[in-house]
Structures are given as C-alpha cells and as structure tokens.
Length: 460
Image (cartoon, rainbow, N blue to C red; front, top):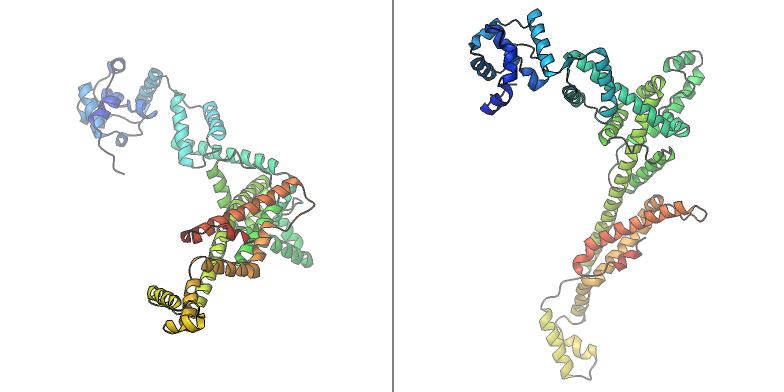
C-alpha cells in the first residue's frame, strides 16, 4: 500500500532532532551522522526501522537538512553490523528502553492472556495491544515472528482457561448431556479404540452407530434453522426449545463472557461435524463441553426469538385468511345499491303519505326493485363497520380453534395444578406474552375502524 506523504506538522512533531539529542550525534560524521539521527524513528514507533524502505523520503530530507548532511549519504549507512548495534544501544539508553528478554516475553504473554485475549480473539488486535504495552513499559518489541508466537500462546492460554472455567460451571450432569449430543464416549476411549473394538464385534458397532445417529439427530435439530410459517414449523421449534432446555445449562453460564467470544464458540460448534466434536472431546473434554454449551445457549435465545416471530406471523396469517374468507363470502352475497340518499327520501315520503299502512303495502312499492333492493341494502351495510369486524373475528377464532390451538397449547403448556410457584409464574409470563401479542395485532388490524380491541381478548 502506498504511503501517504508527510505534512509539515508531522515532520516537525516526529522528525525534529531535539537539543538533548544533538549531543548524541555531535561525534558522528557523514552517513553515520545521518543514519543515527534517522533512528529517531524509534521515538515514534517504539522500534528501530528494518531498513531504508521504512523511512519516508520527506523525513530523510528533513533530518538531512538539520544534520547538514546530503540526503544521498544515507545510501552508505550500514543497516547491519556492529556500528548500528552500538547506535541502537545508545538510543535505548537515552530513551530508557530495554530489549525484550525471556522473562519480559513470559510476563507480557501472561498479561495478554489474562487481560486481552480473554475478550479479544482477533490476533491483529491482540498484537496491537501487545505493542502498546511494550511502549508503556519501555520494552523494545521482539521480532515479528516472536510477537506472533506470543500472541498465539496468549490466545491459546486464555481459551484453555475459559474452557476449564465454563466446564466447571456446567456441572457433571449437563456435561454428560452435552457430550451425549455428539455420542462422545464417557469411558475415556478414543475413536480409534472404539473402531478397533468394532472390528471384532460387528453387533456392538451397529448398536453404537444407532446411538450416535439418535444423538446426531438431536444435535442436527438444534442446529437447524426454522422453516416457513406454519403450524408444523411452530411445533418443530417448540420441540427444539424443549430439547435445548432439557440439557439443563445453569443460568448465567456465560454472563462474564464477551458476546463476540461466545458467538465465535457457537460458530465453531455449528460448522464442526459430530465426529470432529467427538475427537475434540477425546483430546479436550472441557473444550468440547464449552463449544457445545455455547451452541446450546445461543440457539436457545435464537429459537425463542424464532418462536416469537413464528407466533406473530401465524397470528397475522390467521387474520389475513379470515379477512379474505369473509370478504369473499360477503362480496358474493350482495350487490351494491346505488342512490341510497334518494331511496331514504322516497321511503320517508311514502311512509308520511300513508302512516297507517303496512310496510309491504306502502314501503316496498315505493322503492325501485321492491323488497329485493332493501335486502341488498341490508347486506351491503353488514359488510362494513362493527358487524364486519365481528364476522372476521368469529372466523379467526374458528380457524384458531380448529387448527392452530394445538401449537399454542404446546407453546404455553397445559394447566399444572401441582407445581411450584416459580413454574406457575413462568406459565403466567407465557400467557401474558400471548395476550400482549394478540392485543398489539388486533390494535394494528382493527384500530382504523375506531373499535375497541377488547373483543379480541376472547381469542385463546
């Protein structure tokens, strides 16, 4: 990538040789004087330049003018050997920096693992934090390859610590259920051990394959995305949520884990096959437990959101179908009556002319079309206003009662007379949630008619 040219402000701030620094170059001449002065690169980056290519041309010209040495002399400066090593030692001592030793590297790696890598899993960002810490501690960063090894070590150490901590929180019972999702052996046998045993016992191999298939089907169900809006999709998601909750993960298991770290674990568990997870469980049980727990915890939240979306979409579908059905029936049942205002005056005039007459003798003959026209007028009125709303809601309730009630019963559960108050409260929350969804939907659909949404509370 092409380097942006340096402005005068950057040159003055970072490449001006200060008075106390001039004493270090007073005994140097020519290329040595210019090369030493350009090691001022260190004050800006916390390390020495790796060669001429890292020095901006504008900076070379600016420093050369200050040192009263032609910029072309820099081509004679030796970037390796005893001279530049001596110059680097002088600059380190002047700035108070030191070379990163083994003890410093170990200390920095431990600091990264505890304070950075536990929440930041991107190697480049961890590297930036390492270099910034080196500058604060006045330690010259090690070579790039060594920095990479330190970053990898910190990331691995931090993740291993998380795996151990999360596995301890999960507990033995939930651990067994999680490992059961991938059919992991709980007796310490590896896949290769099981394969060797199966060679001499085909019946046992078939039994293990069946068990692994059952476990894999549950894991596949948990990983599966929701289908189209339908009762079957709702029932599938409810079964999925029940399977997830049956694992029994403790509440707040990942409360202190950064969201992006948790998302990364879940993504890894989503793409790994059951066989890969079984091999991981054999080599690092805590790692497999943590990845599977992250998958289950995140999918529980996502499945809950999917259920809410399916529920709202289902309610909208019920309403749309009811409205369409009622509209089609009523459109087929009436003919629009024209000149209704004139019709009212005609009826009023005929009634006033013969107030003692009967409707059939006085009103029907006064209306063009007679009794049939009045019947059409009544049907037209029934297709509007509160009567229309009540008809739609009656059809909606019939659709819900006949088809969708099964899904909602699965969602909220049957009445539980002999349960603890906590479970009763949980069921109450579910029912209030459904009431709220229904109330908002009814207000959105029928609010334009100015009617109350109380009548919709009869649904469910």
